[in-house]
Image: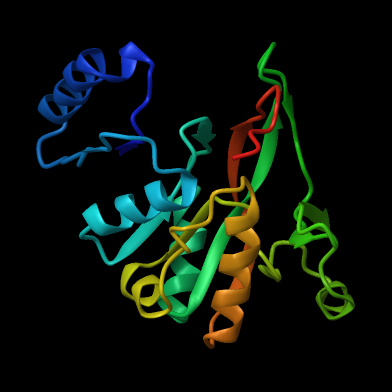
Length: 202
């Protein structure tokens, strides 16, 4: 859990108390916390989390999501079969103002000429398989990803110098594919993602 020098006081002492209570209620659970003394940006913060992780597999998640039951198992199955695959669940959209959930269909995480992330259908080859539960290849990843920890390190992680919101997703996609890996969206894994009311620009 990484705090990029948040100004929200609820994420300081109150969060420490809450995390301690979770660890006490769940013996064996350890929640590592990293706190930056100045804001470093999204890409740097995600790498900080990777550096603090010790498990074989890491999940890089936004704070504003909820996971569905059994969301992790389909992702872990893909990584167990191929350590060079970076996987992502399907995101359901949650309105920030009323928490209404809109289900999204599985789709690849693509990008336009302005390098802005967008959804796009899987390849024609995928459609010919006739099984919408199968993972589909994706050129990019929209920020929420699960991967073997060592593989991410081998390919250089995220570019910590990237500051513009969203650019790290395209850069990571290019890095994974050019370094011999692949990206898959896994339809059997679902999360709910609360949309911001505005997109940060840096």
